[in-house]
Image (tube, rainbow, N blue to C red):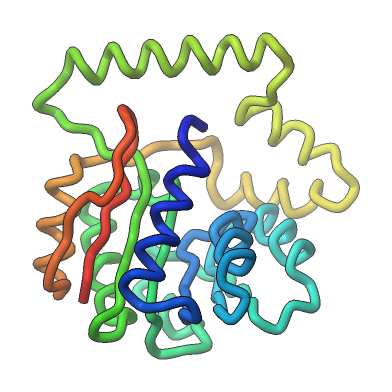
Length: 229
């Protein structure tokens, strides 16, 4: 994924700028714990709650952070209105997510943003780094996508695993085979939502109760949007 570490660096810069170096963080749709990993390496006094529904990715995350008292994982469906009841804390300094919420369509994503607003303390932040497609620039979008996919094709030809190959290996792994089968029962094949532009995200987050919201980083394909409670 292009610029992956750069988006994480800026995300953690803004965590430190807004809420300090010892935050209580909700890693939303945490997957294997990529955000939590970088968070704790940079801020050893932070604590993190990772929430996800994918049993295979959670199995990896739980194995990675086994024995670390700073980390808790919760299995929950973000489309379930009651998912917040599964969390160990009522409020967080920061809710962070990356390349995960684009599988939600706009209506359930707006509902999720309302729930997130209720979890972030006053003065806290929500950040989402994800695909945010601007419909006003179709030719730019097409050129960027073609260039990015050509680079991905070259990487695959050089031996990099793509999405399908990675999951095929997981399905054969003695530890991950069972969780991977359950994952496909839940999700089926990978599917994207409608990926609205950054302006929609900012407007929706302000309507949900955040005082300010705007992009703080962008690449040709992705945006890191920050909302301040």
